[in-house]
Length: 273
Image 1 (cartoon, rainbow, N blue to C red):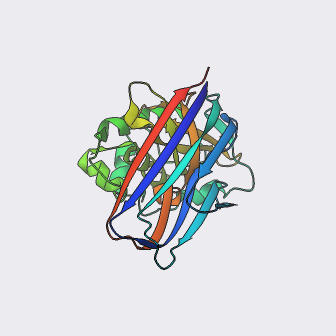
Image 2: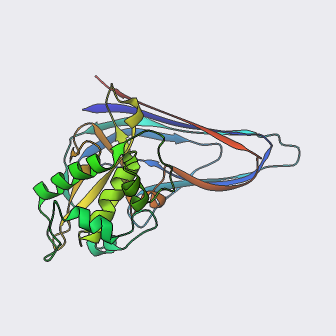
């Protein structure tokens, strides 16, 4: 499937902006599951590219206001075409962190005995560095039921345990709960940001899912969409991955001035003939 994606983030400020440093995780890469044909990112200032520790393409820019400037808005616009193939299993290159690195707890996906107890209903504690795919899919369905999808029920600081105990969240929370459960049971797991095409589910255009390590020794991974409790398929466009949302948000930054900030995000995904 060939998809055209456009992701626009519009910032508005109540007072003039004096300084801003923004870092962007908005550039997908070609891999076994997709081929990026064309992609561009526009920002208020020149963008500088680099790779982070997880192999993601990261861009950053700096804005410095001048005396007399009255800049009260900024716009970041990413767009391009991606051909998806729906390949869910893949091997990590040696350049990426060892799978056991993704057992470490993080602020948003911390292992916990409550999560381990829930997870054992579906999958046993890891003993040999390997995972059963059918059990992982059953776990993803269990997580989706335990943490029902409810728009605006959480925010970007909600932890896996908080979402699990409240029983509601969005795709980000469902992914964090799955990651934290896997880590609690000894299975390396990580958070994936991306896009999801569904004509009748526009709220899921900005999406999140998980990678779980199937075999530590061969660095074999599988990508699972917890919200839909399925393997990723041609509807998914992979953007970035990390230990949790904080490691690969679409945009992260700091600023001086600007007063009150408002942000509007618009994402459209359309199939290309």
